[in-house]
Image (cartoon, rainbow, N blue to C red; front, side, top):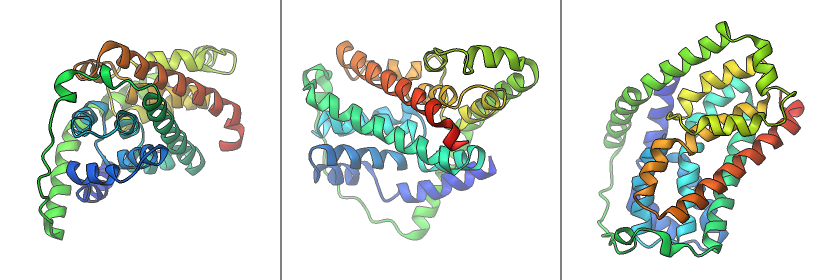
Length: 283
């Protein structure tokens, strides 16, 4: 929690330079796949869970940004952030952390680009497509203002995240001390070719940000679960949690929601198998 607090302070200070209107203007300068890449990168300095990202997604879509660009942001924001990079490095090592972040960005860019090519704008709810966004001038913040904002974010995020971290640590401790290693290896180890698929599906009903899933992932890996299985579980929890899917349904129609879920699920599963294939190079 101390490390998390420091990370949130730094990330929130950076985030203070990217309010929604400024982010919208930045994204509006780019087109094509370049816009998807910038959108995915900007997602790394925004909120920590999928439910927090959806209001921004709605705002960007209402402002007239291309649908594929806004979905690249929606995918990358909960899946990949600067804090997760540091925490993953401290637990799994820099190779795994960097590979996780890079491949998470690949899913975001590829998913957004595919949605853009499919021309699914008509499957956004009418109240969003017909919305207007006002270009309100942003007041330039001073250093003290940014530090105050960052500290407020530390307190607010710590209160929100702490229960999930405790739950994650509790589940991780239960796995570590009570679930036999043979069982984990049998279900999620090399002997089960469907481990990645099972882990991805198992992560969907859960609701937690990446900080709450890391203790569970650490325990599973220590018990003999494959690397790709563990990381697929983390991506499934953070990107496709059931509450965020329900919230997103309020903004998009079922067909677009189904395509979004399918793209993310297939991408996570493919990356899980890829991690399994190269795990000997990373561990």
